[in-house]
Image (cartoon, rainbow, N blue to C red; front, side, top):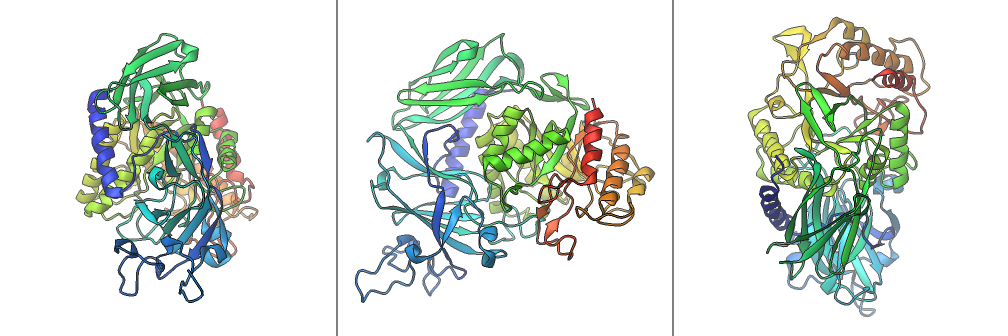
Length: 611
């Protein structure tokens, strides 16, 4: 049930708790539509593998010292005279583009994992003297320490979610400098951990901007269709400022002729409950978005929100109470235009256009939160979305800080995207080995997610096993299968498990009365490499595997869709076979340079004929 008061109380606790552990400001929602000034472009950078700009020679952090001195890179120091010793200079250093990863921009940094310092200088004059200004990062991979005009703003952990810090009291009209220490080293306690099957791009990989807001402003809101009443729009608005109590907020949805005034409580939160019998429901065939306007004092924010319900009933998935089959594909966040980490709206548009051409009504954004362009465009294009927390393979399940990190990253993506109609599934993890500690870890994540957002479904990409020791029958034997709303699992029969004809020798027995999504299947193929269907890496092998797999999966009674692996070939240091992989995972239906493989058309034909 959509218990707004209980959820609000929890959100207050969550915001307060995570603000403390990350030393950052509470996230400002919908900077996508707010007035802002971009800090994208060329930034100066210094490579610092020994972290010489962060520690002195005794390995003591400069930021912990009362007088850090000129050796601290975040001071952006210059020699005072010809005798002064300063052993770095941002302004004489090389430049790098933001957003972007350093790996594909600088050949000598392709495999670099470690610390890079970024510096951006700028002038800024506020629109109103009483306004507040925040610096907002859409994502930095992985650990970031942020300094402004020589002062520490805070730190953030996690490579795929947004964060912001207030700079109002430090801001000058000229000669500001923003310094960011970025460290993408993989660590055992991290999320993800040491071992992944994608490229560990380092850097400020998404947009950076200055967001200026009134002294009291709308920090957050959650506005969705009530899952239990499709003629009621329900949610909350939260203000931030010195005086947030008893403030009147105007909620306007012009097309529905809605003008509703709500009043905040002493915490600055106002509940919303609006009835309307004229709502056009968002769907894959009609992705209808309403312009929702929130106004309080001098602050006015608009958002484009679709209203729909998503639920399960037995073995079915229901969108607006109608059964839907999810015709999907998995996607990594790599640019099909320039290579490297994808970040632009053009990157997102190309990937989603290919998905639509394939016949998809659904995409799995793996294995981490993608940039906001993806979900915003999915809203407009009528594509359903699975979003995933980067709890991947093996995680330090018993480590309390690892759990806090995972929960925080999950909270940040939920907070960012909770108003997107396209997002229907929050995924807790991918291919994690079962254990008691893992079950507690994922179970806590699921409970936390349901408290933050009771309007969407929960899943995870699990693994299949033999049924009662019979290798000819496959099943899902996993305690976490009892927790999820949608039972999803990866299977690679015909690639890692025998040859494609093995698909015809297997049957499936799924004991859970839940809808089933096959979150991954596939095979590697080098585009343009041809041969018979038993020759690995040929387009013909991949094509035959898709033909055989689709026949096999149709025999699963509960099957409600799938998201094969994967739309486009993507970089992975694990994939080293010369002349075939060359550093790429080749399971894509499209090559990294945009050429479609034969299996693309097999899946397209299946989707085009699937009702």
